[in-house]
Amino acid sequence: MARRVVSLDALELELDRYVAPELMAAAVELLTALRARGFTAETASGCLSFLAAQARDHEAARPRLVWSQFDTFSMLDTAQACRDLFAAAQSSVLLSTYNAGESREGNPVLRPLAERMTALPSLRVLLILGAPHSDAMTVDASMARIEDVLWDRIWPWNPRPDVYIGPARPEDARMHLHAKCVVVDDSRALVTSANLSWSAQERNVEAGVLVSEPELAYGLRLQFERLISRGVVRRARG
Image (cartoon, helix red, strand yellow):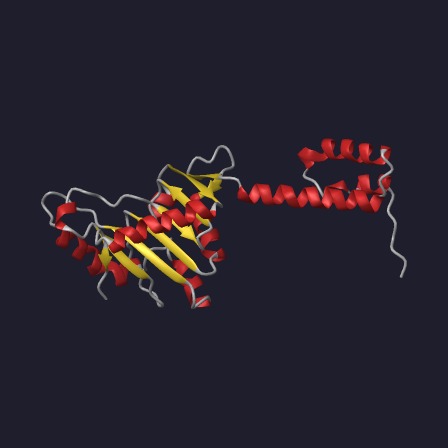
């Protein structure tokens, strides 16, 4: 079958298939230059497709601001960013939060991840929880309080993730495990001021950044694994 030949004039009318509206003027200028140099429509189409793919890759790789509440700049919503990360996870997810977001039906922020674990049994999930404490509460008592509600009010679903709670050592009694982040497949990471709780993601004003940078994501995971190996956090009972 003969290949359909499209003129550059016709290709120009189909530019919206290749480029975003804000890049239309630049694309028309490029087509004009290609026409002047004797490029065929097929070659021009290939160039535009390549440029569009490069632009998509660049867009996916660049850091994105993530915001909770008062979204005046069309930034990515924190709750949606978490759901997207959970849905895309293929091999591993690491989460860290200070507020565990307990409720009678479990933490609603974590439910989509539980569903992903059910759909993908090979997915390894590591959940690091801070144990809020005060001078009037020992490290062991603060950890026990989290453990008492962990499998009923934080993660009541099966399968269960690996859960570590900290600080776990008496010498760290004045330390708070306050980091909030999500690391997926050692390739993408969300670092945010928002806890993994409904109030932080739906009510509070929080800010963060989502990056697709394997070196950073891997480094984050290693930091938390060092906390485990040094005993700063310990595995939850149950």
